[in-house]
Length: 438
Image (cartoon, rainbow, N blue to C red; front, side):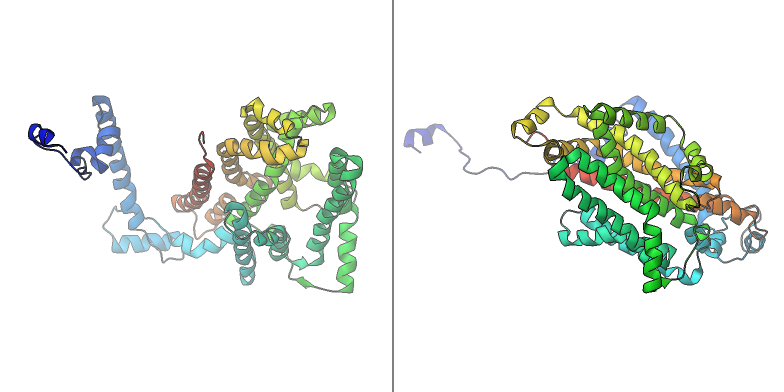
C-alpha cells in the first residue's frame, strides 16, 4: 500500500469476519414455529385449536393405554384386576388379549412347533430383497434373490422339495426358449413362446415330474395346508407375492398399451380396463368360486394361490397405468435419442426409457403397493383368516367376548409400521435418484 493511500484510508480489513449465527429468533425451532405455526392471525388460531384437539385426544387415550393390564386370561379377569387396583370409574386397556393371543394374530393356526419356518422365511426374504433395494449390496447376492421364492414356498407349505424345484424348472425352460428363439424368430415371437411354454409345462408336466422325483429320492418336511395360514403371516404372503409379481407384469402391460402392434395394444388395453373397472372384492370372489372352472378337470388349485393370482393381476393393471404416465412424461427427444444410437426397442427401453419412466413413477408405484398391502384384509370375505378375521374369531370366544379397541389398535399399528416403512423407502429412493438439471 502506498504512503498516500495509507494517509487517506483510516482502516483496511485484511481478513474476513468469521461467520456468526443469526439471532435466536431467526434460527432453529423458533424460526420454524414463526414461519409454520404463528405466521399470521389465521395460522395462530388454527394452531391453537389443533393443539387443544391433540391435548384433548391424548388426555383421554394415553391414561387408558398406560394403565393397561397385561396379565390376565380373560376380559372378566381384566375387569376384576382393574376394579381391585384402580379407583372406581377409571378405564384401562386390557392388553392381556395380545399376550394371550399374539400367536394367533401373527401366525393364524399355523402349528406352534413350526413357527421357526415362517420366521426363517421372513429372514430369507429380507436378505433376498437387500440387493434389489440397496445397490451397494454385492451383486452376487442376486443369486439368493432368484432362489429365495422357491425356498420360502417350501418352508412355508412344506411337503416335497421337488415341487418347488419342478416349478423353478419352468422358469429355466422359458429362459432357454427365449435365448434359443430370439436370434432366429425375433424378440416378439421369442417372448410369446417363453411366456406360454412355462405355463403349459406347469399345468401338465410339473406335478407328475415332482411326484416321480419324490418317488426316486424322498426329500420332504411336514406339510401345512393353506387353511392353517392366517394373521399377519397371511397378509405378508399375499401382499409380498402381489407386490413382487405385479411390478414386472404391470411394466409389460404399460409397454403393451404403448405398442404400435394392434393385437398387443388391444389385449393390453382390454385387460387393464376390465381389471380396473371391477372392484377387488369381486375378483376375490371370482378367485374363490369361478377360477377352478377354467382349469383342466381334476386340478386342485389352492385358494390362497388363486387369491395371489387375482391380487397380482389387479395390482398389475393399476401399476400399468402409473408406468404409462411415467412413459408419457418423458420428452420425445429421449425416444429419438435412443433411435439415433441405433438401439433396438428392448435395448432402448432397458437402458434409456424405462429407468427414467420408473423414476418418475416411484410415488405412484409405492402408493399402489401400500394400497395392495392394506387390501389384503379383504380376503376375510372369502374365508381366509387375515388379522381382521382372526380378531373376529378371538372376540367370538367366551374369554374375550366384548373386547374391541385393543385388537384393532394392535392391528392398525402393525399395518402402519409396514406402510410407513414403504413410504420412507420411497422417499429415500426418490432423493437418491434425484438429479435435477445436472
